[in-house]
Length: 310
Image (tube, rainbow, N blue to C red):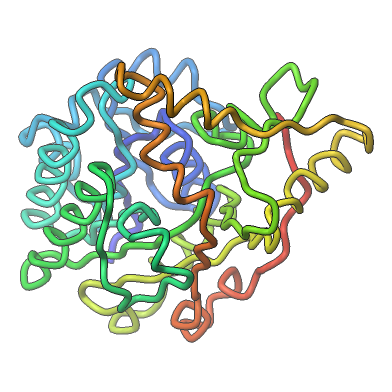
């Protein structure tokens, strides 16, 4: 295996964190971006990936960029999340073709949206996927296509909860709970209902350690859960946030779900948000038993790290 990885989505949260993690571990990191020069200027880190100009929707661009890579990290989304429902699957197909042609393992950060929140309190590798919303249906189809290609493409899906950390800019944590300037906590959760969180640097480190396991440890179509930080009553993240900023009196407000439901029929952001509301009303915990059996050091990390608002 060559220690070369292609990152799709390196200008985003999980993709950027993954790129920095792999660079720190001595890997050669290739990164596809529509505007490679701009991406290099905005990169946060002491070392740079090898930027390649191209479009993740263009099969030829992805295949060309993946030349020499033993792994492809698919952490890309359509620009501005526009036309997400029409573009996500073609993007995945391009990555699958590149992985197939170069013999690379395809890595995908999985979500909980593939499941029925009201009926799935615990998610394992074998939990049936019965999505209730359009996003979940597309996510389930992504995983189905990856699994269906197992005879030709090796893959690793690592499922995690909501992201937080320095690079998680488009997340519930940075856009609601800890939105800057931080004057109040907007909590989407329901009192007494647990919620799963994933600290991006830990998630990326786990991906890296799994990728570096000896050949044959991972299944051809491996699917694992990253337990991360389990907020057992939906109030611990807010408590830790107050501790991080040193303000025990920082006020907390509930997210205005009622307004989103009223506005949802008009489309746009409210409609998108209402679709994921059940994942805040019902507890969904990730079982990382199989991950622990892999014996990666990060698989045993269950404590939340110090919160970073950078």
